[in-house]
Image 1 (tube, each protein chain N blue to C red):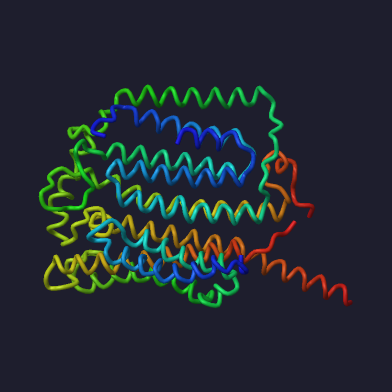
Image 2 (image 1 turned 120 degrees about the vertical axis):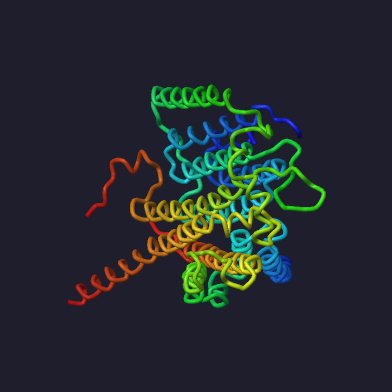
Length: 117
Length: 180
Length: 140
């Protein structure tokens, strides 16, 4: 586990593109949100990969350890995760509301529908 | 992880998709532990694999658990795949210039990280540097972020509550008209 | 799931430990991994488990709406209030060093209080969102 090379970045890019594909190609709103989450998690991994220092340990100061990974990306991503789940919850609540009002969560069926009123 | 994501793309049963999303989060958390981010991994496991999955299942129980077979034209799928491939290729091209992962001389490690690591525990008396930076050095960040969570919570409550009140009013109005 | 005896008994046993673990994560976050966000989520998951096993209505009696809603605002107020207190003590906003005579101890207290605020907000928001989703009937 000492050296990842650039391999990590490529994994991240693959995951990111899969999430991107789900978001733009699929019409189901719930599935779009899952795709968005996949995209998001890949960004988390990307940041944490950048903060890794070879031979370092987790940034909790202890005696006898000199090398630590960079704590800054950890902090940023920690907040990003919680914001991510909050926005996901808001999105899901909107999906539920759309379903109640229109009776569907498929984008194609939504396109031509406006409330009867 | 790649397999999980591939299955998410392929499957049409939303229940399975949501569960796979949870598994994906758990795998991401395991990877984050390997990359030394224990705090982040902890959060990802609790939030991504726990709460998100529960909320998504709740949403599914309120909507539908089966995705409709997409009736897309093949041309549309081709365009989407093309866009995704171009973006991916551009990103991979960009990644070739990135420093190797784990390189201690990478630009990201040369800025404020050393100060945080060397002075953080001394100035705050907290050995976990992530907590020290989160709550003290970047207190404003965290304050704003707590407010985002606060706002999202209020937003969800309002999205659901206002409609119920509105419907109740409509129902009452309808009953009154009926009585007259 | 109200009629599964095993699930009910195990859940009853687990919930206190989940809450205890949440508090441990909350107040031990400065030494090990953890902090307000994680603790809040774990604490909320205790309520969610209770609601899943014993029904949402029972869980709402344990955590009534007004408690949850007060919690959402209270956490934010604790966080912001800490900043105001440090203003009154001739420091900058959210500068914890002035909270006590010893700057290091002040920082330590400030971090603990702030993490507590974050934890309360996150736990209440997550519980509120879950109740909002689960307490809703399917329509249309």
